Amino acid sequence: MAAERALAMATCTAPVNIAVIKYWGKRDTDLILPINSSLSVTLHQDQLKTTTTAAASRDFTEDRLWLNGAEVDVGHPRVQACLREVRRLARKRRGGSEDTTTLGLLSYKVHVASENNFPTAAGLASSAAGYACLVSALARLYGVEDELSEVARRGSGSACRSMWGGFVQWQRGERPDGTDSLAHQVAPETHWPELRVLVLVVSGKKKPVASTAGMQTSVETSPLLKHRAEVVVPERLAQMIRHIRERDFEGFGQLTMQDSNQFHATCLDTFPPIFYLNDLSRHIIALAHRYNAHHGHIKVAYTFDAGPNAVIFTLADTVDEFVEVVRCSFPPTTNGDQFVRGLPVGSAALPQELMAAVVTEPVPGAVQYILHTKPGPGPQLVDDPSQHLLGADGLPRHHA
Ligand code: PMV
Image (cartoon, rainbow, N blue to C red; front, side, top):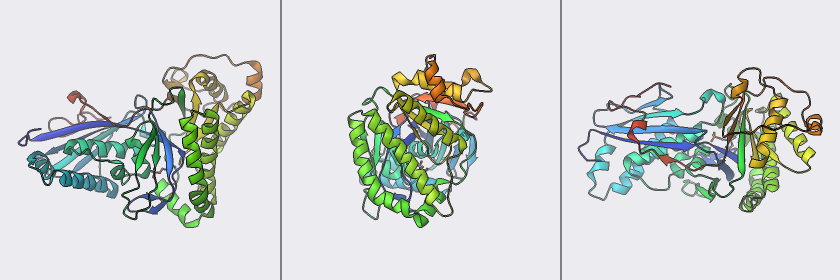
């Protein structure tokens, strides 16, 4: 990038992650410092990703932000925190040097455009990928190469875990300034090649209680959450890391389900209570347990965040059969041919005993579709300039 160039631009992609040891509750709401550490699996960007282009130009008169083609308020405090922190790192890094490029860019306003390759309305966690991508693209624009999970955390807590691929721990940290509240990789995405993820998209509705408000009420009112953070999570984290290192699916799956259940128990223990699970979620939970019981061991594990979609972990050799079980349990009413998306799924004929034991009381149309994916890498730089979301005029190229 030449110092005198009128427009500098960088594009990155970033992944969604799904926690298997949940984060719920802040000890500092401004810095977004959690009451407990958490652990997640980064999902593959071929199926779920955010793409973000950040541009700086001396011709821009104000900072501007577009999400999925529509302009939104760039003044959102969390967006501002990310912008401010990346700019601060850029200044710190280049401050003493002769590099006038970055110093020039830092005096320009930025335009940022961000798009998801999945419907935001599907209720899939998009803020983690969104903030991880914003921070990655800004860092590229300004040439910052520092540890950035601390900055992404300021956008959305879970976003710090989307700064890495594979299996990722967000360490709660001890310091009041948050400098040790960081994410790091426990194992890369290649560590467990057989692990698969099925997202059962059940609702297009927005979550009933936003996580920020929900977790604050939980911190203030739930004694179970306090016990969980102080006693349960530290033990579970160590166990979970062991299961992952050993690729022990039974251990991993059981703890994943137990931790999801405890998170939702703390929601019920919140006053007034918060309900993220609905009848359909409970139906899916029961189905998974019947399926595992039929096989005599854990072959699928569910987890739910602050919404009713189910995320199922399983191994590659179980995918075809379990997808057929879901199809029979929730027969698609429309879009039958698009019921399964993402990685290929083979056909499976279900044995009579399995049908009788597992597929009880089908609920037609309850699951919109299944997205088949697997663990994937962290944020990526997009080299191809034709992929930039902003044109040479600094405005969005196309509307989603
Ligand atoms: O980062 P937030 O504010 O969207 O909170 C995420 C909370 C959960 O998704 C419920 C759990 C987690 O660890 O991701």
